[in-house]
Image (tube, rainbow, N blue to C red; front, side):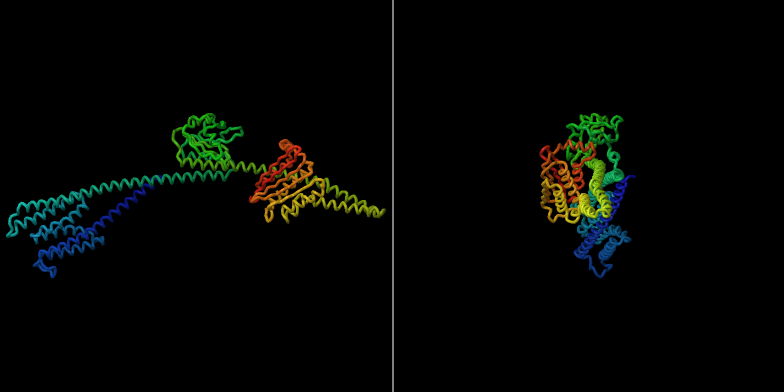
Length: 607
């Protein structure tokens, strides 16, 4: 038994219990209502007895039998009142109904001259019975009451001494009374049964509608649970693997489990202009695997536009774009889900049916959610690839920096230290033979030591200047340019910094900014033959703009970029990668004979 059947059974049982309880409550309410009527009958009989002077209410005496009957009826009314509220005494209620008719008839016998006054008192108990029982049962009670009324009529007109024979009017009145006693309860019973049947039919219809609605919501809940389960399965696959084909396969399989479709297809950009390749699918024909389609102006072309939404197609098999995929040529209804990240299209997912059965909104939402998971896997794979690529470039840059450091040490510091060692040996020998020459060499040795010290400081600055750690990037750049001016007096160098006062920049970003300026300036000094180098740093909001410009000989950017790729040394083009590492961008522009400009934009709130 499925969840829907179980829910319907539970609802049906609950409704039956409610119906039984409601019937019981209605019966008790009816008894309480008629109890009030019975007290009214008692009061009416007391009033009539005093009106026709049947005797005093107290003390009771055998000389006044009507009062004894009235007292007995009062006791029965009292007991029936108690029985309404106490379950074990409920049998007294049925006795009280019989007592109602009998007591009214006895009063008619004891006071036959007042039959017309007692006649209306028959109606409340008869109508009460008519409401509670079927028409035939009600008719039997009415016949009994009619017999008693007829006996009272005969007793008064034929058995009482001194009474004249009944007139035609008396017979007409008797007939009218009998007709009312027989017809009114029977008619009431039939009307009540008809109303009850109508109400039962309405209740049954309402119950059926309620059951259908409950079943509908149970089905929706079950479908919702299945969709959540499907999303969980795809998310679990996404978290356990970085292989996007496996995630696409899981998304298509879970979608097929929840929705009846013929074929599910994933098309991704193949690298060719305007082409998509089938990379994953379910329900494919053998020759469909690896198919390539040309993106045109049809629905697939529309889905490849930035910010495109999920769309439905009524006759996918007639679309020219999908003709290379044989399984789609036999399909009619289809939905196309764009595979996009931040409005960048990667491809499309197509879900198609052979039948002309449109996809409902719930299905479209489900397929869109599954596709988003798959796109996340594709995006993660691309990010991982880019990360590995950036890591490899960073490793290459570190290797080049180490090689450059080794060359600098070998070409400058190592030679200076070698000269110092040779001079020390010479001084040792000269101290014995020629002290004056030894003193001169000591002066030369001091100059060499100063040079070595300067070279060591220059190497330390190249690695990471102390000012960068203690005073910030602005002070570090200024000190770097001071040393550069001392070594390159023929080149004018300007530095302007705007908006960086009281600005805290994290050490990683500061280090990257300094490296970019250092790399750009060193390249300009060594290769541009420039007479002027200007550097500006401007902060606008949370963005930092750096511009390094020279008036050197310039170069062809594309040509130099290709040459750098061939020799495996990117040099100045590493600036672009450095800017990416801190979430920024760098643009290199140069014109032969007009110099070079490097524009760098770095967001200061990235970290």
